[in-house]
Image 1: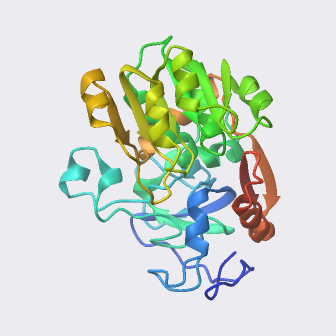
Image 2 (image 1 turned 45 degrees about the vertical axis):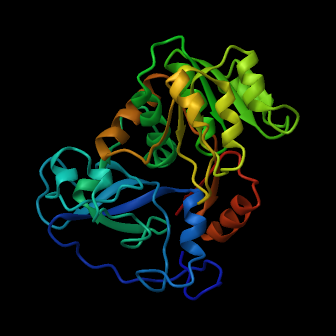
Image 3 (image 1 turned 120 degrees about the vertical axis):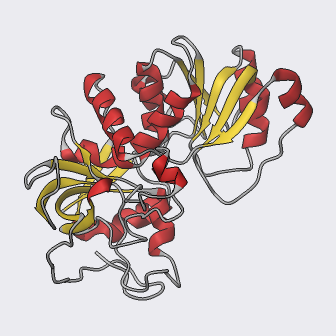
Length: 331
C-alpha cells in the first residue's frame, strides 16, 4: 500500500520482488502496525526517498529468503522488525551497543520500503525473534510501541512498588500501563475524558485522572506524587504542569513527540533532584526482551485488525483519534 504523489491516499501498488542482497532478508509480512509516526511518513510532500511511499515500521512475519547464509536465521523463522531498521555497525554508537543512536540508522518506511506490504526486505541486523506464545499480530506493535515503553520503564531503574504515572492512553500508553503494572508498580493513568477509565483499570492502573476535569499534576501530588511520569501522548503543552506531580528524585520521561517545547522550573529540579529526559526506542535485542516479558506476563496490545487494503482507512481513523488501541494491517 503506497502513496504515489503528494496528498494522495494509500492505494495498492504492485512491485516486482528481487532476491535480497547479502546482509538482507526478505520477510513475508503477516501483520504490520499503524503508528502515529506513520502519519507524518504518508503525508510527506517531499520524502527523502521519493515516491512511492510505503510506510510501516511495526512488522511481524516469517523469513521468506535470505540474501546469503545468515548465521542464526533461516526461512520460516518468525521475526519482528521495528522502528530500528538497521545501522552502520562501525560508528562509536554502534560499537558501544547504542545502535539506535547511530547517525546512519535505517528506519523502515523512511530508509527503505516499509511493512505495509505482502513482503518487506530488511537488513539482517534489524531482525528480532518472536517467542513462542506470542502471535504475529501481537508481536507487530512490540517493534515500536512495545519496546519503547518497556525500555523507558526499565531504564528508570525503579524498585517494585514505585508509583508510575502514564500520561496518554493510546497505542503506547495502553502498553505502558500493562508493562508498569506487571513490573510491580502502582500505576496512575492520565488521559482526557472518562471514556478510557474502565480500560485503564482493566489494563492494570490503580488510579485514573481525567485531565479535562482536574489539574493532573496537582491531583498526582495529592496521591503522594510519582517516581516516574511517562509521557506517551504527542502533546507538549500540558507537560510542564505534570512536573508538580513528581516526587523527590522523580523522573519525567518523554516518548511522545509533537515538535513543541516545555517549560521547566529549574529551581524545582535542583531542590528536588528531579530529572526530565527523553527516550527513543530499543534495539532488536530489546524488542526480544519486551516480547518475552509480554509473553510471560500476559501483556497484549489491544488491536483493531484490518486487511492491508484498508490502510488508508486506518490512517484516517488514527488521525481522527479513533484507534482502540493499535491498528494492525494483515495481508
